Length: 145
Image (cartoon, rainbow, N blue to C red; front, side):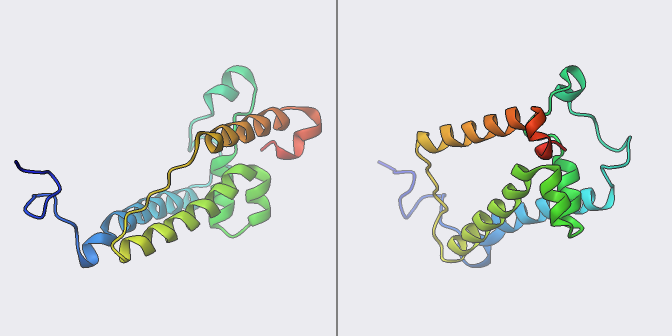
């Protein structure tokens, strides 16, 4: 009987520089996206679509201001990045940390396995919900884009 992950399998472990292909490919895609947003200013109207939730209801979603935040981040204005969308800006740093961990593990030939317990996912959802509600209330206007 042939086992899919046996030594004679076609699914062989990638070696050397090939292990870095996926993390470096993701970095290239993210770098390209940030380069585009850094070049094409979202503060100028007409370059990007308007948030559908904001357009239909006037309510800021957790992503509203994310493009302005990315533009400010890539141009080095961290204050404006946090002001446009604090959650997105924190996400950029989180992405960088996870990406470095992924690259190091890939270099060592180990997979990146990050299984978060359901409580963590509920916590992330709760933070996004609270952020969304607070940024739409008068006392939370500092969190609005």
